[in-house]
Amino acid sequence: MSTIADVRNLVTLLLVVLVAGCAASAPSPAPTSPAPPRTPTISKASAGTADWRLPHPGPEHAIEGFADRVSVAPGDQVRLYVSTAASSWTATAFRIGGDARKVWTSPEQPGRMQPAAVVQKPTNTVVAPWTPSLTVDTTGWDPGDYLFRLDAPGAQRYVPLTVRTPSNVGRVVIINAVTTWQAYNRWGGYSLYKGPDGLRPDRARAVSFDRPYEAAMLGAGQYLQFELGAVRVAEQAGISVGYATDVDLHADPHLLDGARAMITLGHDEYWSTAMRGAATNARESGVNLAFLGGNEVYRHIRFGDTPLGPNRLEINYKSFAEDPDSTTDPVEATQDWRL
Image 1 (cartoon, rainbow, N blue to C red):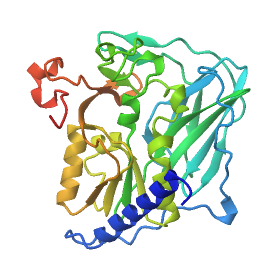
Image 2 (spheres, rainbow, N blue to C red):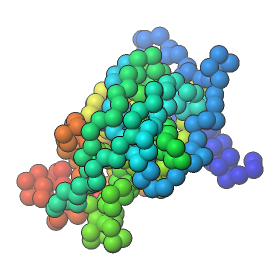
Image 3 (spheres, rainbow, N blue to C red):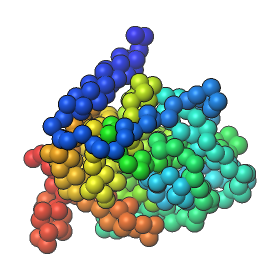
Image 4 (cartoon, rainbow, N blue to C red):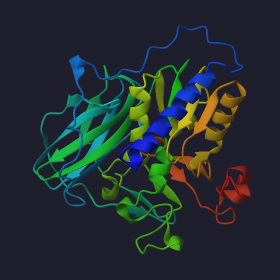
């Protein structure tokens, strides 16, 4: 082992294999459906590429974007919202598995600078009031984690997207922790931790998915830092993996029905009541749960809707007394799960 990352990936692989193996002896009845196929891996016919990386990120706002969905089912459409000072740009989608595979490239698109961020008071919620730039059809895309690479002359950024697995029966389900990515995202000046002055009292009390991830994250949230390595190891091991986000766990109480295991990766801190309920019910039905990082299930959140769709506003006051729901719906007040 030459690096700390190598050691971490080996440990992750051992844990993933252990979870998958233990699930075979879970007390729940074996699913009657046929065993799921292994997650697609890179073959000679569709060789992986290193071209997904960003050799030239460029200045902070040279190009940036976000998607109107955190996840889609295969065949769904997703809209990209892109802002750039360049005259033109392109988007390329890569499926990140055992290697990275290019699955789609856009025609050249006209560039435009979108309007400045808007800060909504009193919660200090930052939104990007942009118009859609491009609609992408995911027909034929395998379930998995994807990164759109946005390219303009001298600048590049990512936009992450999860393509959900239609059925998780018999699978080890990887949960992308997008609520935690968004909590730490300071695009537009505010995260759930700090405001523009860098101090906690000025922090946001609600954060929106209707904005890019900040340049320090390369537009990818915390995916590169905490999740990419484990995803690669799991797929290289040939494990039958399912994919979803924690927002999907919130929205679909049956997401884990028949699954062998649910795995959250490096940092999965922000959980709603429905997320916790779905995971608890899955555990009681014999689904194994593995939390591979620290600070898991620590912050209690609830969701709201935005003009772009349901569950795109993440609310967390970090204080029972400060949360207006403490008097109207105290069960959903957003103090920490662990006091």
